[in-house]
Image (cartoon, rainbow, N blue to C red):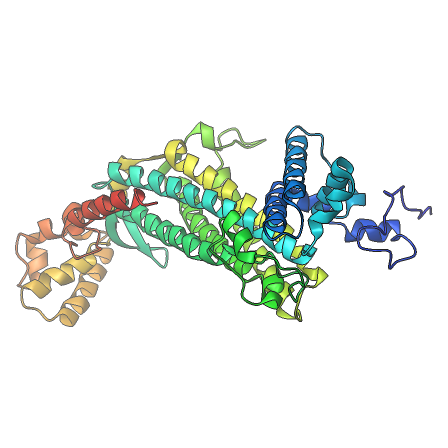
Length: 471
């Protein structure tokens, strides 16, 4: 069998120094390279490099004219990239060397001055933070759009009733808006967490060097200000080796996905024939290749599936970091693909679920009304009714269990019992029992703060309206 490798790109030993006499083996060069995925950072690398060049000129390490030429050269590379003319291959190893090499082609030896007082270790840390900072702002805006979609649905369904469940068993009827607003609150915590993590992402490692700082008279606070960082790492070892910010982001991303997945599971159940609580519109559903009657909930199923993918990236990052000695290690190259994929997955899922809520789902209100009237989810209200008549709650609770057993034996619901039957069970029952156990009254009566009572739900929606206006 022919085991010869296909032709590989030429490897260069000049990326690092003349310490090495021969080039990397072609297969090792390909294995070692990250340009295939870290090209995602190219614009952030250019931005960080421009700030570094400005700082070098500001501190007198290079002349102002040299600084201006470096900035203009980096601008040229940015335009080349946006126009599709800058697309380095494996021989560049990574995006940082690719940019420096192209800059040297444009400016000659001056391009080689850009890396003065900087290591790829602090450079990649800076690029990654700039990238994640932007992406988190976009994700935060998407969370707000998702919340707005929930909010508008809730506004329409304050007095629509839906069975509430515990243990996936019918528990008590609730307002559909109350149910939807529970996901609004989950998303609110996600929005807040992203803001909290952002503060720890927005710290500059630029100037930490390889691990120990530099002998050049740099001004780290100047570059941090140019790049809109809130501060700088105070320990150079920590600056180049820290990935807590990435783990925190992946943790937050995992929580967002977990919340989306829970909602997805409910939509999948609601869309089934057994529940029939919702109809999926054609714009957000697909059919079967052999069963023409089917309409499949692909959007929530995919979101539910992709959730495990993001969870995996979090676990991978934790395992990646747990045994690394200070400071930088090549293992840290593996953080990029996890971050990039998690960002794209979360953003894609938020967009899809927002569209589903906005235009892909319709609640079957008549079916929901039937559902809340065909079970014993108002049993707790019978116990509450007796308690208001002076019967100790635990005694009332036990009595209601007997009432339910009686109904089941007679194939009746609570509403079907005659007043004589009620009073046979306990003399405290009066004709107002029927009003007390009517589904709409059962929901309206739960008017405690944060409850499903219509008054409380309307107040929650008004509070949500105010929060949606927050930055």
